[in-house]
Length: 393
Image (cartoon, rainbow, N blue to C red; front, side, top):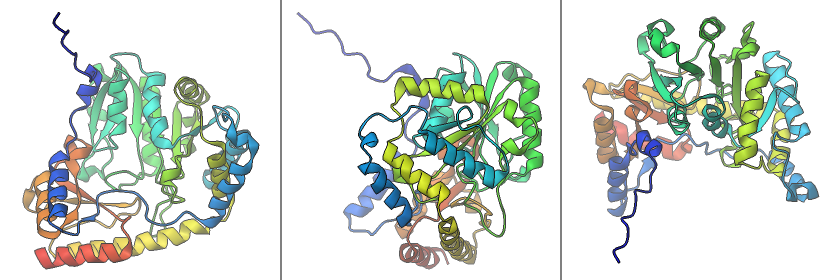
């Protein structure tokens, strides 16, 4: 008897997300490493700086708490939600009800990925920044929604133009994703722009989702606002925060969402069905971060700012034209001579052994740009910059 043909493993929705765009670059990196080349990665945004000791002590104390050996509360412990609300209130001047308007997340990425499941019906639209963090698009597709790309252009300061979105798209739209300070462009937005976004969301009945993961990674006296500071935003917006970049806790996987009560409850309902909450000991560590000494952030920023300044100066010295961003961990630079982002990144890798990220990986509007990260240790960053000067100077 003939065996039935094995069906494809991937679902149609997974196939729509598309292949990994950097596969060829990965192969080139592996080939160079096989030849003994010391490859330096300036592509990943993963802080290299250590988590502060008082946060680690919080984890240790939490791990010894017998309650940590059982399932945590789905929405986060009361202590964590109160600490998050207290931090948010002190930072942005907004009072949130920790029982109804705050939700613990297994990192902000998890919350962003689950929001389309909580809010979209099949065929409905999410307005997604392009270039943008890939999870906005991929999560929308996984929820059987349709992502609509909002181009972010340099001549608008990498802010979307809402007026250009067709009305037939807006009539099917349910979600508006924003992210400022922005990954990958490093762009910032002021309260005037957020007021425009809130008015637009209100006009079209959208839930505004603001990814504010980089709110504390700012330089030169700039302080990032919250969209919830806009009058009326609480009626239609939810904002996500992460401890990953602010407190050097990427591996700890903890963040929180604040804002519109209905949206918080919807997201919480999804989470009760797909995960079992944040490990209580990690929540204790997060409480230590949010309520403890905040000078750790200032020390971190001083290091990133020094790296930013060295990187920008070195790239300008070889005739490239990077901006000096006021926020985030990234320098978003136009490729020289109109090269494609993949070709330019490949050329840099082959000539210097330095990995940078092609902008096309963040959406079609990222073509013609590359992203460089500030999260490489100083000695390695300086070596990478020396190689670039030697190869292109």
